[in-house]
Image 1 (cartoon, helix red, strand yellow):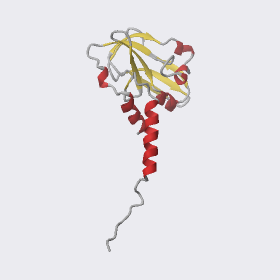
Image 2 (tube, helix red, strand yellow):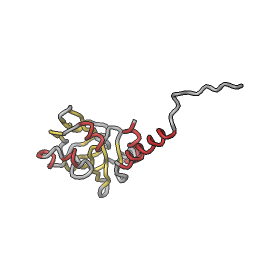
Image 3 (cartoon, rainbow, N blue to C red):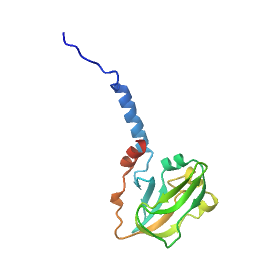
Image 4 (cartoon, rainbow, N blue to C red):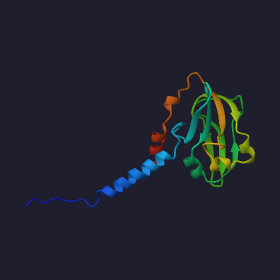
Amino acid sequence: MRQVKISTLAQHPRRQRLADVILRSLMSDYPEDLKYSTEHEWVRSGNGNSVRVGITEYAADQLGDIVFVTLPEVGDTVEAGDACGELESTKSVSDIFCPVAGQITAINALLDRHPETINADPYGDGWLFELELDESADLDDLLDADSYAEQAAS
């Protein structure tokens, strides 16, 4: 008679399906029309070479209640990956990293008086700044919603 060793560490098929459901659920939490950085910022294309930048809901949840925001100045030139501001929460202070190269054209003045807007509406009224893309900037270098969701889940 042949002996077969059965591993008790094998994942149960129902657990795998549950993991797939959770991953799909996470993927649906990130707007499909945005691009994402590995540093948890999002980019929304605007008119021409203009884009709007904010932080993801995942980042806002990880930070906790945001109480103070420091944003770049209009006219500043930034490179992809540059720290260009800070978010102070009840837990910590975190840098804002610019996901693409360009020149800052607008900041969200609402955040001076109401930084908590970032937590309440990170993809809407909680945006951080707008910039005119540098000629070398390529949004295709950023993650799509599914790729970002996989990163956030890991």
